[in-house]
Each structure stands twice: as C-alpha cells, then as structure tokens.
Image 1 (tube, rainbow over the protein chains, first blue to last red):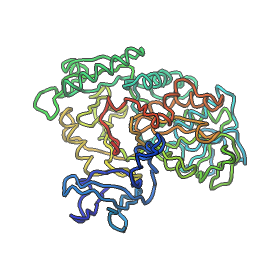
Image 2 (cartoon, rainbow over the protein chains, first blue to last red):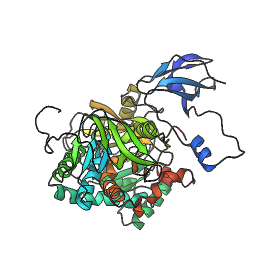
Image 3 (tube, chains in turn cyan, green):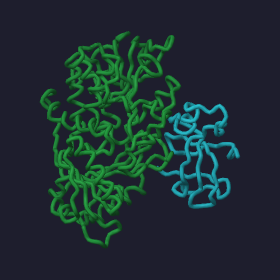
Image 4 (tube, helix red, strand yellow):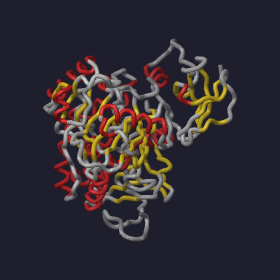
Length: 86
Length: 407
C-alpha cells in the first residue's frame, strides 16, 4: 500500500515521512458558546469517508509543515487539489 | 459461492418487503445477534443484509485469537463471557468451533511494562479471570523457542500468562452461527447492499437496499470496519472512529514449536501456530486511515525482523500467505454499542478495532437483548456513544500501544 504525499515545501515524498493529522474539520470552534457536543464533534468525530477526503498531514521527518491534501481512502492515491488552505 | 445450489446454512429465500429486525453486515456480530434474537427472544422475522458474503470482512480476516485480559473493569466481564461461551456454542450449534484454549503469553520488555501487567492482572483476577505474572525463565519454560537473552532489541523481562485464552477457528464460528440462526428462521441475504435507512419523525421506518426497500422498525448496523462510513452516510451520525488497514500473514507449515499465543507490545507482533502448523502472525496497522486492505513490504519486513529476534528458530522460514483487514479504532480502544438514542429503532455495534472477533458471542447476546426489550443491558451501558461528549473515555489504551492516528 504505497503512499506518496506532496508536501508544499519539499514536493512529492514517501508517505512514511509524514504523520497523519486527522480529517479536515474546519476551524476550531469558538470558546464562546462552546457546548460539550460541539467540542466533542471537533475533537473526536470523523466522517470516515470511503473515497476522497480532505485531511491534515505533518511532515515529521522533513520540513515540519502542516498542510492538507485530498486523498482517496480506498486507493491511497493523492488527488489533484488546491494547495493547503493556510 | 453464490450459485443456485443450496447454501450450507439452509434454504435460499426471497427478500421480503418487511421484517421485524434488519441487521446490516454479515459478520460475526450480526450473526450472533440474529442467533440470540431468535433463540432467546423468539424474534425470528430477521434479515441479515450482506454486500459480499458472510465472513468476507473481519470475521474471516482476524487471526482467531481469543482472550479476556483487557485493562478495564467494563471490558473484562464482556470478554470473559465470550470466552466462556465458546464451549457452550460448540455444543448448542452442534458445530466444531475448534476452540483451543492454549493460553496467551504477553511478553513484557521493561519494568514499566511489568508494572502495567500487574495492574491488568489485578483487574483480571478481580473479575475471576485467570492471569499470572511470570518471569523470563518461566516464560522460557512455557515456550522453549523464546529468546530470553539480553542482546536483542527488546529483552524479555517477564510475561503476563493468561491460560484460559487461545484460538478459535473463525470461519467455523461464521458457519456455525449462520447455520444455527438460519435453523431458527433468520434469513441471510448475501450480495445485497444496504444503501440507506429511511426515518420518519425520528423513527426508523425502512432499510433501502439494491434489491428493494425493506420496511422495518429496528435496524442494527454492525458492519465491522465499514460501520462508521455507513452510519454517517445513512444517518449523518459522526463517530469517533478511524478506519485502518491491519495486516496479517502466515508462514509455511512447521512441526509443532509454539503451543501458546505469544504477543509483544514492544515488538508490535503476535504469533501462534495454527493446527496446520503455520505460524500466524500480525499486529501492524497502517499509520493513516484507509480502506485498501492491502499489504506492504514495510510490515512484512518488520514482522520478519521481530519474529526472528524473539523466536530465533523462525529465521529463514518463509511467509506463505499475507492479507489485510479493517480495524475501526476509537480513541479509547473500546467499542461503541448504542441504540434508540440518536434515532428510535436504530442500533449500532461498532468501533471494535481489532478485537471484534473475541467478543462476538457475548456481544451478540447482549445486543439481542437490547433490541428485543428496548432496554440497554447494564453490561453495555458504559459503551454508549455519549461517553465521548461526557469525557468518560475508557482506559483501555493504558494496556496497549495506542494505534489511533488521532491521538
């Protein structure tokens, strides 16, 4: 199950250099009006898409950047995407 | 497999337009739930909906190990009951499940691990489960092939020995339960894919499949690694689950060398010798969620390195077969069992990670009682989805290496 990931700084690299950082869930909820539900939703809950999902990666053994990619979870292939949001 | 001939468990039936209960997923948790619904509650108008064939998923891909040496007070009694049920089911189903209670040996590679084992053993003994702490020499007496020298990567300090555990033939459990459930009137529909759940006023009304709509008031999703995606897709309920491929492999057959299940957290490896003589081994999970169920050279190499260190007699032995399955991991390494909470009539039994096999008999029995009476049995109450919101996560992670990519 080979995986390559395109780091915005280092380019296309072996997937084992990276650490998976979870599904893209949007911005961290505001502390104001925070409920146990919305916090739990942000911290724990996943969609577990069998298909293309946007997700976070950390270039652990490389430049150390955090970024998102689109990947098909049924094939492990990266999909053409707009670059990391931030 | 899908030919016109009669399936081994009974008659082939036509899918009806309504059932009392529909179970999505043709794995062990569904089969056991169906069996106990029929046997203990007289609910026989039950359909099991399976996209592929029964035992296609985790039920046929796990490495068949059973044990009750978990960490927390909530989990141990459940697994103990499952362990006690194997001989009972063998008799009841009149089907040889090939339960071999050869015992599990959990190797410990540091004093910290020995202390953790002491706590796990105390939990087991408190619940009446046999489990002992032994030193490296005693482990060597139990498994002479072990390397207890100090010049390996993770020298063995001792082990947790759990004699009542062992191995059960997983396919036999699938076939035995299918036969048993079918005999009591349960219908098993293979090659039938659930594509949705219809609700009205917060109640389940029907299950939509590629073979037609089935009206029902109760539905259970227990589809192993696919549960989380189905539950989110059908009802929009998100779960604290990450789905990972877990890999396993067997070597060529050897003369008897291992008469216990041996596992090591530090080496990320477990091994047992099957009755055919193969060393069945595995433990590795991919580091990122995926549904591929593919193997990687990375882990085959790791497995060979680990095995040849702590079981050096296996050096030069060849791997014969490799495969992968799905593990739906939760942040606290404990399953999610819930019902009538998010939607009336909707039940779920998922998040079992890599321990769904060991628990299937007992869980099927309690889920059946939950669905039949609409009352959650006390033993399942701590496993409700709400625990994540209430921050009442279970401490199972304390006993193991944490695999979830989220933590």
